[in-house]
Image (cartoon, rainbow, N blue to C red; front, side, top):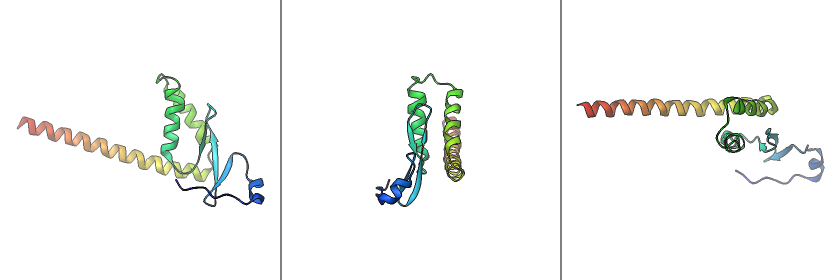
Length: 118
């Protein structure tokens, strides 16, 4: 992550408390249902980690599908459309990589099974 530039005082007054500039771009912070703030800087893993820490760990891994869904809906509802598009692309990319790895893992397991049979 790059260091943040300090804004001129004139601009600092115009920035809402839930927003900040990051290398000249206006960055928005969103608030989870638990009160934790997340910066929208394009880092999908930061959101996933926050979900894990704030939902899964705080409920001692006894969370439900509804708990996670409710928090995700809360996060997405606060995102500007451009950010939602950015995170959707990141999410689809990440899921496609995970899917590809699962398919390759299954293929390797089948190959190992054949080798053992021969």
